[in-house]
Length: 458
Ligand SMILES: Cc1cc2nc3c(=O)[nH]c(=O)nc-3n(C[C@H](O)[C@H](O)[C@H](O)COP(=O)(O)OP(=O)(O)OC[C@H]3O[C@@H](n4cnc5c(N)ncnc54)[C@H](O)[C@@H]3O)c2cc1C
Image (cartoon, rainbow, N blue to C red; front, side, top):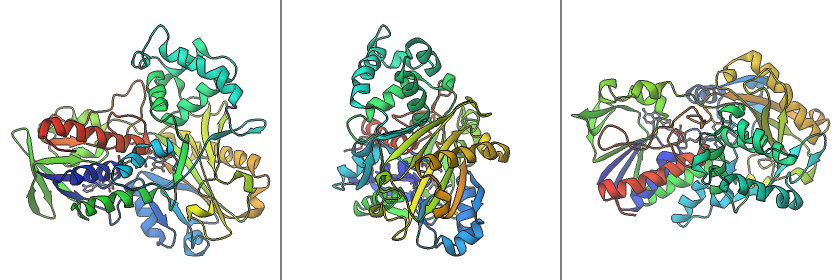
């Protein structure tokens, strides 16, 4: 079969890897000159205008920089690489990208760790062995009690679950992890079933990890696998999907028409309307309105940090803020700071962090003014007086971190569309986990669906 994948994000590249491996003629079309979509790692030697245009493309802006972004890009940032914004991957070697790469014989090199907590005191790990003995049976009780299955907890909000079962450290655990898993602060909007399911899927490895070379190394390795399997990656923007009588036949690209048996879109679903006429796709307008998730991220370039922090990640929760959900959770992470990750020049330490906010809040300077001091405060608790050792810092804000938020009130669309032979893949699609895990897991699920509908082998 001749298969077209529109977009070389992690979801698109995972599906192109799997279908090309199964022997199908695979063509990926990516409008940018690089692969990886939102999972990009950028060398800071690139010019600032290029970086700014990527920020715009991926729904981001930089509300603060010290000194200015111009000064950072024109000198101070040389030798560093950064992602578009903070990235950590849930699940370590059990994460979906690691599983797809391992199916291709590639071992993903990761720095993985457990999670610490910055409260009045800093604790690492957050859950001690004794806590686990106390808390884990309670969580299992939650999962398998009267409601008996996780899916029946899908419609129960985390706020209600905490009200009913929250006690001692379990309350804080249930306030933190679901927020960090979904990138949503409002516990009334977080589904108990979805978060337990996401957590259960990733059990058995490091809770959080970061790949050597940056998050972008995953996209590069998936692209390498696609090409090794005979797939072709074209750096061209797709203008249209050709639909005739409810069947997708091909695409228009660079003024030419090309025909395919299967077309897979990796675009964020809200953008898909630009490729097909709405009359061909019932419900297209509803897709356009689906909200993503938001965060304020920060990168701090430090000349020194306490060595015991290297490789670890620390959660925090700031109470009673004027933001959605009132309390805002986030992470200060020291994985990028590890020399073996290779994103900072020798002797320098890049610390990444983020605090969650609503997607609309991420666009508003006033809300960013509230959140920036939160990030600085928690970094200062871990590295007291860090500013004395700081070469530069800047704060990218994003309102489409996850393509579509995973909440109780939002139903993500499925891989299968109302148009025959046209499918979706990516983090906007109903699948296990969030972010990079959801994007790649949706590709694994789609290949299973194609096996049945189109006899795709694998
Ligand atoms: C700042 C930030 C922080 C994040 N932090 C985390 C994190 O800590 N953990 C986590 O798991 N996830 C995180 N994410 C989310 C994660 O990056 C995404 O979930 C994942 O990369 C999405 O992959 P995707 O394949 O769904 O889509 P995308 O990455 O959006 O890929 C879509 C691709 O389609 C291309 N495209 C669009 N239109 C066309 C066209 N017409 N023709 C051809 N190509 C086209 C785009 O250029 C892009 O490459 C973060 C995202 C951001 C932006």
